[in-house]
Image 1 (cartoon, rainbow, N blue to C red):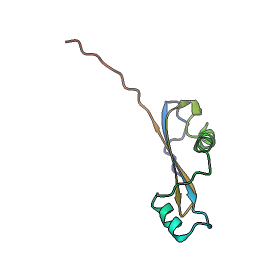
Image 2: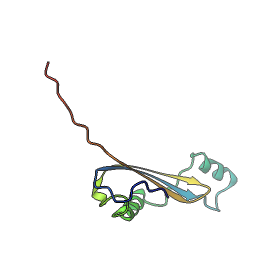
Image 3: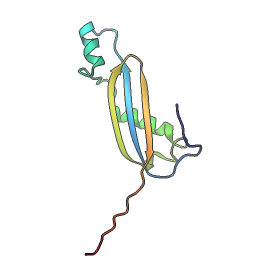
Image 4: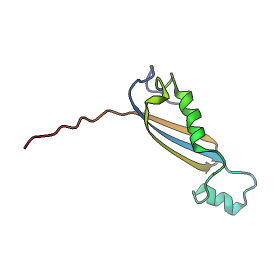
Length: 101
């Protein structure tokens, strides 16, 4: 785990989540191959519930509160090793400037 800041941010954030599930032992060799190249995807866990748990775990560690999440992108796939990869980036609000002509 890589944390680049010592205090939780209070800025708005974008969160990218990649959930990787182990390939079931019951899969045939063909199903395993399909799963590893992304042609077969896991549909057992609700992605929204998994993200909610991960975001709750980031409270007071990565960001102050998960209400700061203004963008969220999540994916599920199979892999050789189960893992959750979470990437958090602060969003810098862009100020729109209208130039009078």
